Image (cartoon, rainbow, N blue to C red; front, side):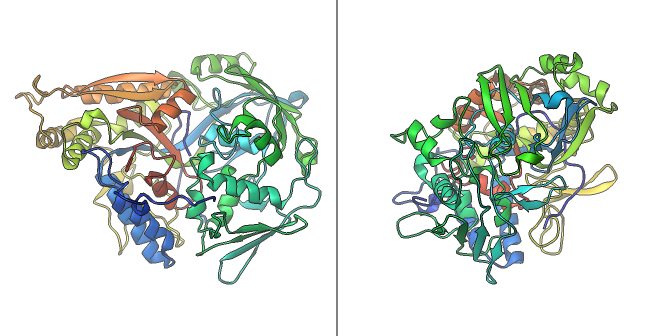
Length: 580
């Protein structure tokens, strides 16, 4: 899931235990859909590899396939990891009870605050409040406030039943999940909420007309598909039983039952707001939309503020401790920090980059683990690569990567001890077999092993190396890509490189962009920085309107496939435009 704010790394390794399904590009009719511009890598093989992972039931073989997929992804050098995430926030002493998990979810409804009112900044204007359409971490936090899934995460990070009445029944072969639904559930408008709403919402997620970025998860979780194209799911006549049929076992099925994209939404509201099916998220564009979770959005002044109030129709309303939450919508780190210091805000999810060193030892400054990677990505179809072969374009991107001083970024921008990243799949992510994926073992050895703060780390390159350490190699790669250099290792005027770097607002993101800009300038690469508002940035990046962009991904569940399937040709999260 896309992360908005500048954060730091995960601390320590944790191992946790359609109206037409999305199709892989390699399966599309006619000519290959996995090939885009002349300089872009052919992506049919990658799509086929991920499909093979979906089909594989032997866990050791599955892990091996995922290592192969990450190797193929990294060989493009279109995805350049910078560091592994953790999260930072500040919270005043007069509030308590917030909990968060590895995936960046923050649970506000069960906090305590003076007069039962919390004033907070989570982010700026959200891109989507429809949980099926959201793909950002801040949007997921708001979805958790507004909606409920079959399962949720508790304060210890454990999966617990939410709309489900007790644990799911799982068949011996792992192919059938049966959920009893709590009796008496209602939407915030008092209408009945039952298993039929879950069936509708999951099919809606998979429906291509919804254009959900996460539609591919229905395939990832191995749901069967009926002859009419709907998913292999059903509700009992009384609406109190929901059953899902899988074609193959899925170890993280219950994790996805707690993922916001699978939260039920009210069919009547959706259809009334969008009778022609041309604007699927129209029903949740203003305050007052129907919800099922702890709170409802009662006021929304766009680009300014939102208010959420307790939902008396929530099944567990007695446990909700806050009466309301007032969110300041802003990406101005300085204004947010000032509002916190003058008492206007009691919780902020970002800190100006130049203030981190001043607050890092304070009791109201928090660092919590995340499972994800801050990275930068190239649009493989960018005009930057015009006239290059796929091999030459990859060498260009690898040279960029070698010039970036990650250690400098984490020391001077992150400032909270994060680990520079030499892999895309983050350190600590489970391998599906009770171990950690990013470790050397007898079956797989990463190309590079290096020392990180006295501990062994692995990757495709040593991310603690400076740009100066890698300068000669970077220049040689660019020469192989057709660029000419002067005797001082500066680019010749005959073959200049100018690239635009796209980022969203935020002092940390801008500081990282400036650091990369300086690193590339050492050999004469000219990088212009373009900063956009969050929702504009998200859509420009998604639509491939960039050369080079800042990115971040927090895992949606603890399995490497989540970091790999996002690059499928048909994925709505494939910002690099592979196979497009």
